[in-house]
Length: 173
Image (cartoon, rainbow, N blue to C red; front, side):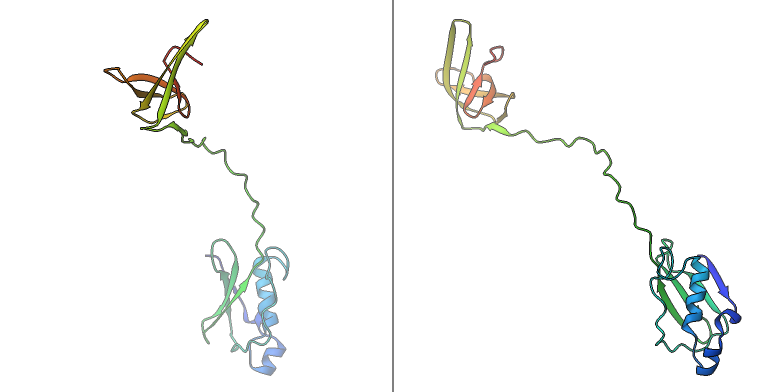
C-alpha cells in the first residue's frame, strides 16, 4: 500500500485556523498531489470533498490508496481520529473480444426413438426393397440402430436416415 504523509503546512490554512475544522480544500489539494491528476480528470478525484464536513484539525494527514485497483483514496488522521474516502475516476476498461472458445459439442438430434415404427429400405440400380419394423434403440441421423422386423429371428442393423426411415448398411439412399 502506497502511503504519502502530507505535512501540516499543506493541510493547515488560514480558514482552518479561523473555524477550528480541517480545511476540505486542503484535502482536495493533497489528493490531487497524491494522484497526480486534478479533480474531475481520469485518475483524479471524482468531485471535491464535501465542504459541509466538520473534521477536527489534524496536524498530519495520511493519504493512501484504498485498494490495488486505485478506485479511491483514503485520507485519514491518527489523532484526532477520522477517515475520508475520496472516489477516483477510473479509466474505462476496454471490452475484450471473447477469446476463441473451443468448439462446443452440439448434441445430435435423435431422429428415431426406441419403439418407433421404422421402414427399412435398400436398393440399387433397377431394384429396391423395403420392410417395416420397430426400432429397438434410439438413433441420430447417420447413426446405427437395431430394428425388429416381423419374421426375422434376430434384429436387423440399419442406419437412421430421418424419422421413421432407415437403410441397410452399404445401401445409401
